[in-house]
Length: 287
Ligand code: PMP
Image (cartoon, rainbow, N blue to C red; front, side, top):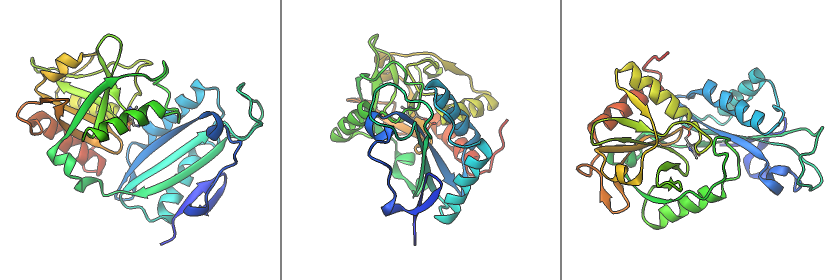
């Protein structure tokens, strides 16, 4: 089956797809991206992802490569061409190609790239069994709210997690409070039964899955407290999980050497996961 990538106006065979060596994405990581999950051929939370793409572009004074309707049309076309029933679509916008100079150039055309990948999300063992995480210092920059392609610190953290047999690394700020995972938002159910996730700010990415889950939880009458929490609070929690477009709601059963609860996914986590999976398969309406 032919697999295509979309590169600057063309659908190109995936293996042959490339961008220029002086693309600012390649030279400076001067670009932003989105990852949207696909279930049953349908994009989950597409509006939320496009909204965030626009916020990231604005924050970096970058022009949108295309209008919103055209962008979504191309996303749908690539998904259809590649016959992705379940998987992800990756979208990246860089400032474009220009002679290497740190200063943002003006008057250049942004580069737009899209690829897809098939992933069998719902049969992943980690959704039912949960995962282990480690904690590491957050060494990233001060604008983690921008979904920039400069992910070196995140890559280092994820590699460290993998080396420790863990799925994710939770990053910790200078005050000992957890910011977020290297590619996910972090949630805990505290000793006193508060469902907590860190408040928005420049220290974290505003996860689209986080937004949807907050909405779903509140519809179910579950209060969500958007507040920072320390590693100690997390180690003593009743339940923990991470959210992202590709991991949905993945329960966490071990934090460093500390087993969470009974070492199996907690009951609130399982309920929230069920509601979120129903929502993402189109079986549940939300506001
Ligand atoms: N934080 C970071 C650093 C991420 O890379 C991601 C994944 N994009 C998230 C949080 C979760 O965001 P979303 O739910 O939109 O995938």
